[in-house]
Image (cartoon, rainbow, N blue to C red):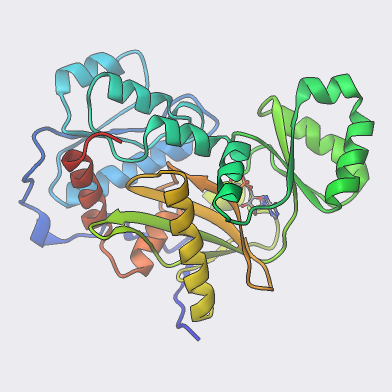
Length: 343
Ligand SMILES: Nc1ncnc2c1ncn2[C@@H]1O[C@H](COP(=O)(O)OP(=O)(O)O)[C@@H](O)[C@H]1O
Ligand SMILES: [Mg+2]
């Protein structure tokens, strides 16, 4: 058995860790790091919190940081500030769909994270799932259904066919989304229509997946000198849904960092996350969310190119569980972005 550290979302106050040995050294950075946080998405608040956390950590590593929202002043601000690196910490829409990264390439600014095309592929869950399957990585069986077709074909007939094919329970979610918004687990066929309506409130295409049971894990990957490497898996235990409230408010979620896994299970989930990171051509950092079945097979739910970085978020917990120093790791990501600016 591996030894486990139990971390609840109340106690993760590690984001401001302090390492005086790196305080004075800002070599390689010719201007401030600009952290982009906010944006107009359902996850604006989470993004602001992620931005604050990363900014604090970078400052404690001796890096000059400015935080800016995505608004009408941003382009002029970037032109005047000439940052050495931009770190887009935007969740949802433009932050994760590649658009903001396209803009940063347009104005020739290095940035932390994956390129626009790769971000776009990952942001669209069915596109990412197809790439995972092509790479031999397991992901739950699924159907993708646009609202217009659903309506044209007659809702009930389509839902019946889906239940026949995938069985129950199912999980209905928007093809693009985050923070579990618009996600519903369907135990009984009678609950299916309402789940579709809830999903269509967040987007016009639904992804309907077979529900898989097992241990929910988030495995973060960081690029390093020897290529991508997985951090210890973080295990998520809830007594209800792992929904928006559970994620961002102190409450009934428990995190185990590292996850309570046997060594061969830990090795398997690490391998799956690194393969997913490579298969999708990701850069610097990613977080692959998966469910490990009782039979020991990891099924990937989604990959995040802009994972949450708040005080309760999974990637920072994994960094701490690996025995690494948050400010140091964030600074090394910034330095990687300077060293190899093009995605
Ligand atoms: N196929 C599935 N089987 C079991 N649980 C699922 C499945 N899909 C999603 N979930 C649960 O719903 C949560 C949110 O789904 P996810 O696809 O990760 O959406 P989001 O992008 O909003 O985080 C997951 O963290 C997991 O707890
Ligand atoms: Mg998720």
